[in-house]
Structures are given as structure tokens and as C-alpha cells.
Length: 120
Image (cartoon, rainbow, N blue to C red; front, side, top):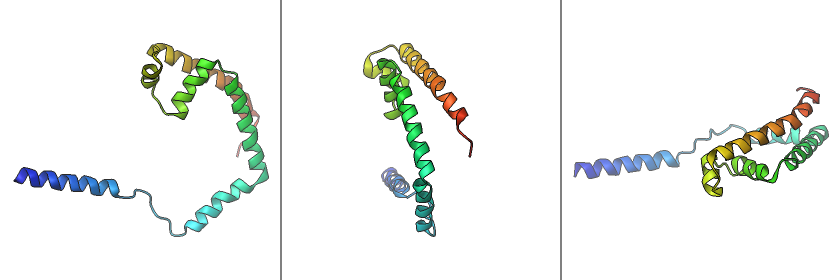
């Protein structure tokens, strides 16, 4: 009977912790929304965002198809190297090598753009 009661209490405590909202409420959420949208309305910030997106898209298009696929699986779907290896049936070392080469190629293309931009 004691074991059952302790298990029940433990389960209820875990359920309670999982339901708890970890986000801290802000006294004036409207102020946060206004501050966030002010930067998005600035035409210069919009132009810079569009330019960065274009540069990134072109750099991504320059990758080999296999590298594009592996980078997409790793970064956009959040898969680990091992999960990608299992999913595609490729050796783990091959997956790691392709992703490393893709990241180096992206750095080589994107690094000059970051140097040319003025800092905040």
C-alpha cells in the first residue's frame, strides 16, 4: 500500500512540474511587442535582412546536392549525425565529412559578407 501511495504522489508531482509554465510573465507585454516591431519596420533593417537572405540562399545553392540535403537534415530538421546516417543509410564518417565540407564552403562564401557589413 505504501509503495502504491508513493508512486501515485510521485506521478502527480511530475505531472504538476510538467504543467508549470516556465515563461515568466512581463508586467507590460504590449511594450515588448512594440519594441520588437519597431526594428522590423525600419526599412534599412528590412533591406539588410533581404540581402542576407539572398546571399545565404545563393551560398546554399552552390553546395553539392548531397551536402545541401545533409545540412538541411541537420539544421532544419534537427537530426544528429547518427540519425542522418541511419535515415539515409550512409556511413557516419561520410555524413560528418560532407557536413564539415558544406559548412566550410558556406563560411568561405559568407565570411567576406560579414566583414563588409558595418557592426552595430
